[in-house]
Length: 194
Image (tube, rainbow, N blue to C red; front, side, top):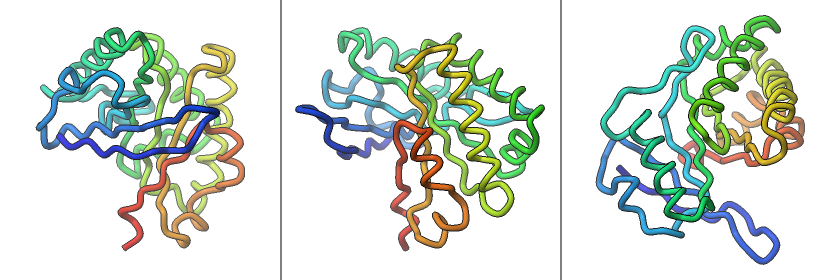
């Protein structure tokens, strides 16, 4: 497991320090992370898009195990830590999930049910990449999800996404201005620079 620490942006007299939990190389387990190191933990690949729903990964260092470890850590951290699973999936599953209003609503209901059942602080979306006709459909999905999340959880529930960092990818795959109004954070995948 690798921890990638970075300052996301300054907030009035404080900071956000996001940590991406990558279960592929488990060198540090979630429960071994010192209290106060991270303000937000994004669990990469804890959940995947599948059949218009959410599937939780079954893995010793990810999925339900990682979610439970992070919730336990949050309790030790006086509930300051924000636990945010990052939703991944292959292109076809994403396309099916957002292709029309009926599919999007079924997917959104699945996400809300998952969020309620897992006591999480937000959802992160990592789709590489919603290009072409899916560029606007992705924004539409986020907009519809934001409305349902707002009604269900209020302002405290975070919605974030990871976007490619290259200008070509950003221009062709994301409506950045629209997403910027709908999301709490946008993470740049800087490995895309090269």
